[in-house]
Image (cartoon, rainbow, N blue to C red; front, side, top):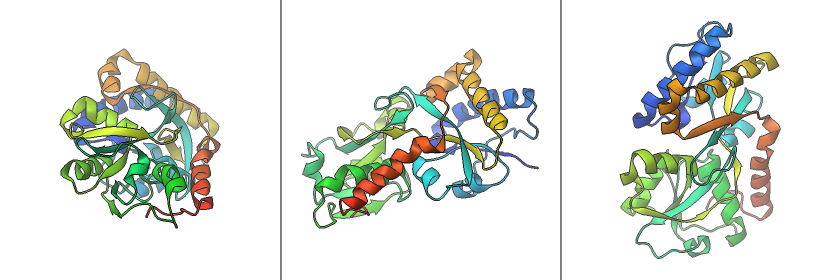
Length: 269
């Protein structure tokens, strides 16, 4: 068996060292607890959906929207992270509405007819929370003048800075990480609002994992984050802890989707 571990959701090149250090602190605890075939290294080559659906998945982090849609029944939540970045509260986070620093927009309503940059159509922070935020402002099912899919939150930020888009909804954790480690990436934007909150990106394991296995993973995560030897990596990632969660804790994500659909706004457009 080749078990798989991934921390890819916040694994920018300038955070790979921090994620490697965190995984080292998690991994040796899992081995000490009796879990076999704990991988020495994080998976960074395979597509994320393949990683999440692999029956040999040991631990990964995923987005809340796929958890409740494409991955329903394929993974088991282990814990939700507690982040220390602005826009986070306990295990909840939000998206920040960002525009270019010199742009005239002051409110979300001012952005009617504008160009939005979206990281992906399956993103809770870049799509679902934004869809919920603008649903009540849309007219005849439309709010934006154009929607561009960029592939990542950092690419969406770049689109706004370069003038290729007027605004984007950026996960507050990504924004906090960029502000801390690569301030030039956010120097050209300003925040004009926040979306509703939802649970932060969950740590997950394979479907069918026992309650004992899930508890072991959660305990290893919590202990690694509290480990003084991993403090530098944990601080770099903005982690303050983890809390137990169930799939049902993420039901609010689908509530937001239903509310947008009921308002006649099923798709960003």
